[in-house]
Image (cartoon, rainbow, N blue to C red; front, side):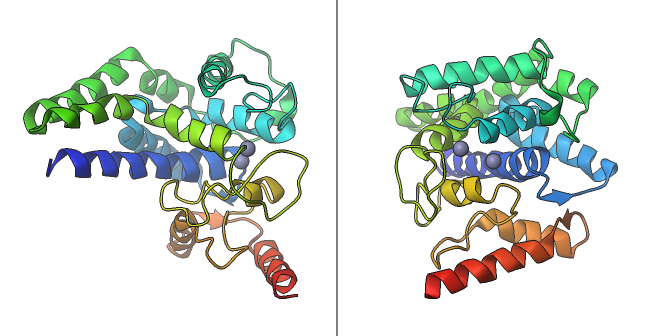
Length: 260
Ligand SMILES: [Zn+2]
Ligand SMILES: [Zn+2]
């Protein structure tokens, strides 16, 4: 128990961090920029921490741009308004993502602009060799350290972390929670205090201001941990936040509205 629970928690938050930081806010929305060399390092780190759950920044980036463009219409890659159940939605999402990543479908060029791409690395990181290697590693950790039978219940979750993280936002944050903005889709802020999804829960804020690096900050309790990491990496000159001034302006305007 002393090993498995911390191992599970670390894997949950670290894989999620690279999803929200690198795949979502960078590859899809370009909320900040980085050099091509730094980008390659983040590709590798994403593979390391997502392990058997590795998602291609190229496939994720394009599919997610389509989600914003077609949110809650029949062309949305995932929407609880059109998909009958969470499992059907997850399956459809997986199929569309795989087809885009393996370039089986033609994508409208407006969705591909500047999406980071490293085909050779993607090929390796998505391969069965890589997935089985990580899978065997997780299994060995459980074999050695799972001292109670119920701890084994966490293992299948670790094999499916990326789809689970995706489904929490794509299903629940389009169904439950509160809204700060009346937007043309069903997005909601799923958790008032996002202890689970590293800021992704503020999904209604995000649908309103897609390229804003901070998903929270509209109400006082909306603290977005990933944004603090972005600010830190920006200070360290690893990345550069785009349109920083615009960001500050939005926050000021929103706060004024809130106060009034
Ligand atoms: Zn959404
Ligand atoms: Zn987004």
